[in-house]
Length: 206
Image 1 (cartoon, helix red, strand yellow):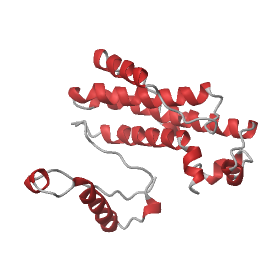
Image 2: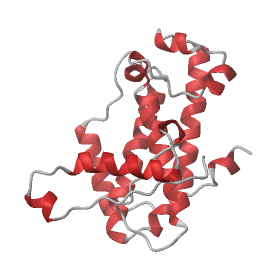
Image 3: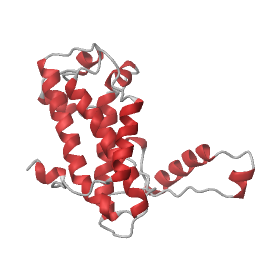
């Protein structure tokens, strides 16, 4: 992770609530200006996390970072096919090299043992970040805990589905059914998850 951070604040005002001004363009502009102020280019951004749940403990920041990385890694693995079709490869070059698997093979959808071993490693890394993010749940305001738990369970279920498909994300798009999402949300409302915390990803890999 880089040592610089760009903090962006975007909210509503009478102009955006009652006029024709849209929040989305303002958000993009605010992010760009914050990056410029911090001296960051697009390639310097490791991840983004939106603070919507509210927290009082400064310890929440670290675990929120882990949570954001876990979500981002899951999206990368789920969307491999779509991204590579547009010439975008987000699997780290060092990982491709470690498993002797080329970006050109990824573009061709080569799903051999090398690919599966690499994906198994990437899924494991994402799960490490989810485990490290679990302590965030009791640190945020109580009203936000069910929503965060639901998000973690939904994204973790995407990893489950990738595994159940033997890591083949080329044959069909990984997508959770609407009933499955509703079941996860209902479970989170009844009993938000606050246990099962693991070490930080760095500690788990040492």
